[in-house]
Length: 466
Image (cartoon, rainbow, N blue to C red; front, side, top):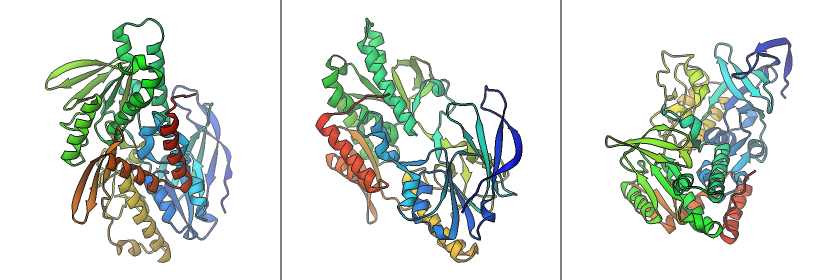
């Protein structure tokens, strides 16, 4: 169905920063000339685009998926991977498996989309070869484009964050945190250290009081109390966890009663909270913070930055093509039909967009389901865009909010008819686990996660990393 034909010559490409310029072959991909079907290109393999693939009738389109990662990542369980509660492969589902199990067709490129020519409906894909400074590029055409590149961490311009902090957006981030925690414990166990240096190494600081930061703090608490207390009893009581939040309370999107319950649980578990505190700078050994006009320095061994997200680079590249319309620095402005304002045949969804909806996984998932049905209608109407415009605009219906807070406890805010029910405690933790098993992308993933939890209960966690 698809063919990639080499161009007639070599073009000069710019290598990554700090390396020499190189020659690399340039390929051009003419997907829409090979079949009467329209070519639909999906950028990203996150919640939104993966939901589109599950619900799209691929018989109507030549489907091309482009992403730097060839799998879907179940992000609600990412914090648990940092401490070995869940193994990484259990929450990584190859995108080809998701599509193939449903008997659908697509072509996948493990690459990053770095540029777009909207007049020619052409995308530039770039792939950096592993272990080399060489870049391969590919040009593909599209008839319809869906941008679901997601978001990345937001440092808010705080000095030192990029260099010294760990983040928690991708599986590589979780592996880095796991290694950093292990190294800090081993260093604290080795040699003659001052008490101040040992306390610094064993201090875990989390910046950001949203669900990700709260869940990570809860997972580290469980690691300390359930496993490190057995492995390194002489150190476990010296491990300290501090959560820093710039707002007056943590979990600002949750019911205030749940935020208060979480704060009480953290206090009982020995997790220190510093709300209304702003991080001014991060060095290799201390954080400089400000609260109530007073400044302080906090020594740390491991710092995890979970203080916000921003759109990935391609969203800003596309914004720059229509700057008179795309005026928000946060991401792509879309309308109620998920169309990117100032463009044609381009939709966007998820964390890379600016709309009236919050950047949540369930928002992106619902957007993906809506857009898949709209694209099915578009194909059935032979490209008449009125088929989309006659549909009801996308509206988000909240399915509730959940967060694990450690000690086999969770908080949950669930819709019940016309009201919200707030739950906190062990029962909410059972509900949270049931939700995760239900929402995982396959039976294989659900069984893998359930097995991980069972192994943890029977044998404890393992912090071994390569």
